[in-house]
Amino acid sequence: MKRSLAFGLIAVAGVGLLGGGALLLVGQTAVSPDAIQSSVIRTPALIDSAWKLPVAATFNAGLDWQTNGSRCGPASVANTFRSIGEEETSEAEVLEGTGKCWTGFCIVGLTLDEVAEVTRTKTSRKVSVLRDLSAEEFREHLKHANDPGRRYIINFTREKIFGAGSGHFSPIGGYLEAEDMVFVLDVNERYKPWLVERERLFSAMDTIDSDGDKKRGLLLIE
Image 1 (cartoon, rainbow, N blue to C red):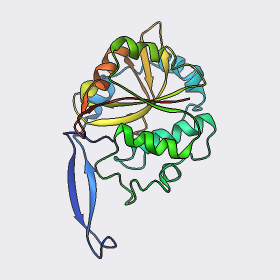
Image 2: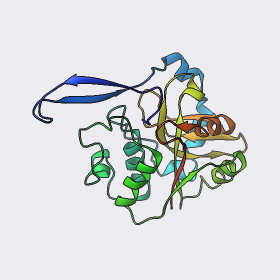
Image 3: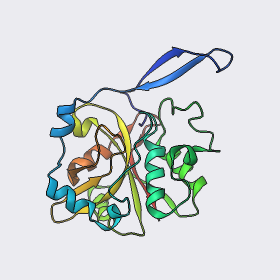
C-alpha cells in the first residue's frame, strides 16, 4: 500500500517496542466488494487470454498475496522475482537487510523510489523508475509489457479505478493490445488479478503521491 492522503495511522498499545511502545498499523479507505467486481473487467475469456500472455504465463496463473495491507510493494517485487528466477521470492526475503518495514508493517507504506531501492539491493538486473510519463509514453511501455525480458510494477491509486481506496503496487502481467486493456496482477487477495482499460489505468497512475509530491509511475526490471 502506498502513502496517500487516504491513509490513517492507528496506534495500538503493545509491548516489545521501545519497552512497551506503540505498534503503528496502516488503514485505508475501504472499497466495497461490489465496487471491486464492477469497476474492472473479469470476463472469463479475456482473463484466460491474459494469463496466456508471455509475461503473465511466467507467474504460473498464481500469486502470493501480500501478508498485510501495507506490504503490496514488497509482495509485488517478490512475485516478480519469482517470475524471473531470482532467489528472493517472499516479502520477508525481499525486505531482509534493507531496514524497511522492520516492525512487520510498512507503517505508512513505501514510495515508488523506496520500492526501487529495495529491488536494487536484491538483484543485479537494471531497475528503473519511470514517472512523469505522458499517455503516449505509457502506451509505448505497455507495448513492451509482453516482452519476457522485462517486468513492470505499477504504482497507482485505487480511488481513480474503484471510487475509493489509496495508493497500491502490483505487477503488470501484460497488455491486450487489440482490446487496449492492461492485465494487473493485483497482489491483494480481495481484488485478485483484473483487466482495465489503458486510459483508466494511466489516469490512476498519473497522480501525485502525497509523500514528497512526486508522481506515481512504473518500476521497470530488465
